[in-house]
Length: 562
Image (cartoon, rainbow, N blue to C red):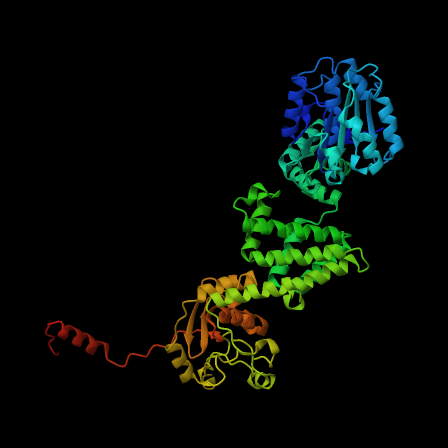
């Protein structure tokens, strides 16, 4: 029968144990110096090597020829413990032998000396499952056992053990195995199994395993069943993970507040049988990476991802504040907690993405805090908080926006006039009693007025900051205006650009409003938008020969009349 990898490649010596050097070094020194303790407690998360180290310690304590504190693996004692023929090493599962009767059997057995080995070793796995009566019965024997008995207790939930047990054991805390150590071990095992495993795939398996080498070897087993050439695609297929491109796409939808595209992405992933709960968990992990990039000095040493993925994460983190990232994680975490409780997993995830794309729909304290943070940033930039006008006044103010365009050049791009829209309301006046401070609209489309508008235009110094402010809304919009210039004139912001895409964006009312909102956030002023055209220069009315003559005369040179 095929033997799974985590059993086939279970470490036989302390040197083979990955990521637990702080424990293996201590245990080897105790074997070398013959300072073994009568009771050990191994605690830590699953798959970190607790039971493995317990078995190695049992063999090393009884080995006839130990080598540098590790069992030789060749003597009859080592081989007997390995194949189970020596009954002096007993491994007991406390989850199925948790009653006081089972512990009393052990208490009776410890009185007898070992049959073939030097020590009688009892390995009690998941010891926290014992009943209170069983713990009480074990106390006296655990405190003063016979000289030929060693207890090794292993648990994943050390907080459930009584203090009376903890005080009688030498405790070792097993850490989660670092991703790099797991990846190196997987690469070694794959080479021994004649399987091709890329380093990126090994790191991805290590990330999914979350510090548990046993889980990593189990996932590698599933990958080998799919293909003997294992890359990231094979790992994602075996683990049921969403492609990193989908995670980036969903993150960009959240950043750009694009609800429609996020719903389309969820529908596509659901059609591909992706687990929605797992996808939500991966999104939380993705935003955790953004949080670490935003708050940790050296996040690269913590995050398990390729260089390309790390660069993409860095780019996304530039468009979000730390408060935004924490808020996004909180919304996704609440959706993850509610999954499986009646509402479908897909529905919960879609609701979370809608909230993240439209923060005004979320009335929680965290959502209000995120909006207050955005308001504080706007105030720091100089934007003044203005009173909201009453509804009748707003309706009275709504009108199609005029854009200065020369009548004789109809082919030049200009924003289309739009019907009144709620989102295109001009900002309220700074003071209700002074409406005359609002930018005045130019006269109807007449060439003379347009020429004056262009002639009086002055450079708008904050245009570069506006382009940067457009990035969190849409990178494509921001890129369309890169290299452009802007001029201010009579309440208009005139844009000079050689990129026709910029004027195509100005034709759409939604995009135009987004640009105006960014400008208002930065300057506190509402502008009308339009294209800029350099004013027409006046034609020469003076004879060039006469002008040359005047210039030469002013320089002291006599010019003879012909």
